[in-house]
Image (cartoon, rainbow, N blue to C red; front, top):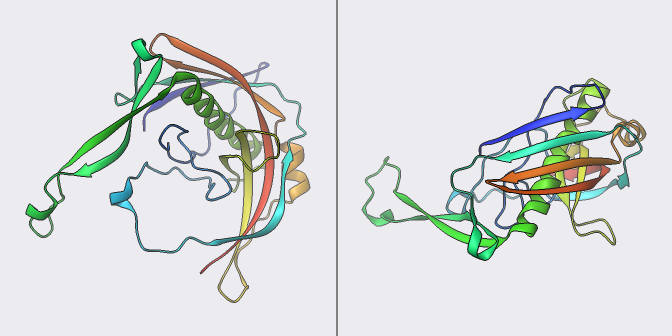
Length: 228
């Protein structure tokens, strides 16, 4: 998923350290952070790309808690994915919602099947809001990683904050095995995460000649996941 981002602050340039999650139909480049925020880049998948592996169970943690850092971050998100287009007559966005196999029964063993895109449309404002939230999450996570000198902090979006539609969230996590023993533990204290997390990120999203701006609230979260 290609895109161009330009981050500006009050005289400070922040190094982009980590990516975020994939675009989901009509929502964002990322999935809900309550399910899978990480600090590593992921590629978009369709139903044909899923596996039978069970995801970890989300257990108790801390947050989401509003970030307390008053740093002023601004990011410009310029869409250059050729599969994402603006539909002027509908003031909507056309995007690839899934990929469909066209010759699955004819493919020889070891050869990849042919695929064709399945397109859908969504209102421009809805698309832009979630792209802004996704961009804010990436920007916030990169800032926090830089501030705390780590690469553990990932960014995502969530609807788990009461009274909010979608918000950006930065998170760290501890993973437990099936018996409840730690497999990996974060070295980032939750209080330090909240203190380093910006309260807001100002985002400008551009698609062709269309532009959308919003200030995205950012929250911090510590999660505990247990393997199935």
